[in-house]
Length: 422
Ligand code: EPZ
Image (cartoon, rainbow, N blue to C red):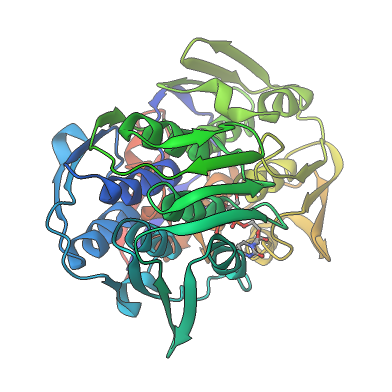
């Protein structure tokens, strides 16, 4: 297991390219299995979760060729012969559960392991299963596996997601585009990842109405053809680097290859801290202010403040002059990073689903442990502004969601080294 050694206390200056989105790529990869011919997906990041999903797709018999130097995936679904996704792979990555919708949606049968837990509390899939049952798919549970049967076609109907759920929306769309006479998803997620998936499926030949709204209506078509598409840039990586550029006086970062439209309310929130945010086409320039203002946020579903930037924002608020609050209304216990930041010198306290932060607190280097993808990158952000040297352990969490992180940070002046954890 690798770790980062980071010597903090210097501003970040220069340009960072934004990679393709992990959370947008995974649904496209699952959707490509619905086609009668191969699909080509460009702008795919070289991340652990992508390699994990490639293995899951290969297990069912599809052919996957990851042209790494071109960040391009070629997925040929025409040889699928095994309609099962095993526990040892699904437990590594929750999004493997998309195989349920893809396999039952195309082949009328699927046996997929329930996803394992994760670092912060339960992440149920009850909405995925109830929605499929509402569609007319037969769902049963057997020794930790979900068995879904849909036969040739199902009647469809309608289902309201409460709460709105990205994963459930993805799985229900995948299950219905070839199977459900007519199916309406109410309170559907509107995240860019879901919009991209729906547009991809329509280009393959699907009939989906209401794309980009919270009501999706799907009518089954007889077949879908593989297509070539370029995956969205990663809006969470983008937000993470915008925060990195805001945290230390003198930092000045230019981020290339962005889609600013996918940031929702985030840029304006960041401007409220006194940070200069200049959006120009697909480039965003962030310049740190000399005095960060405290700004409280509350996460919400898209286009509200994304929960995947909650930890990063709270970390930045340790450097603001004054008190602030960060509330997560999507995940009520996604605060595992807080005790680690306190060890670096932060003054923070969690109460229910809110962390209260008193700033500005100088941070000093320490050895800290990451516990999940966004918590781990927040520890890196903190270490970059802390005096002296920090160690961020268990960075395999980071390798799941941030492509070439240490290279990108080194290129803008950070003192960060990856070493084998002894
Ligand atoms: C997706 O997870 C993302 N993962 C998460 O990003 C992100 O945090 C989350 O959406 C919210 O935006 C991927 O896209 C691969 P949800 P997902 O279903 O789909 C509850 C990262 O860091 N819920 O939208 O699993 C759930 O408990 C990852 O990149 C049910 O109650 O999230 C949560 O409170 C972490 N029952 C809320 O809905 C269900 O059946 C939203 O979860 C499903 C969800």
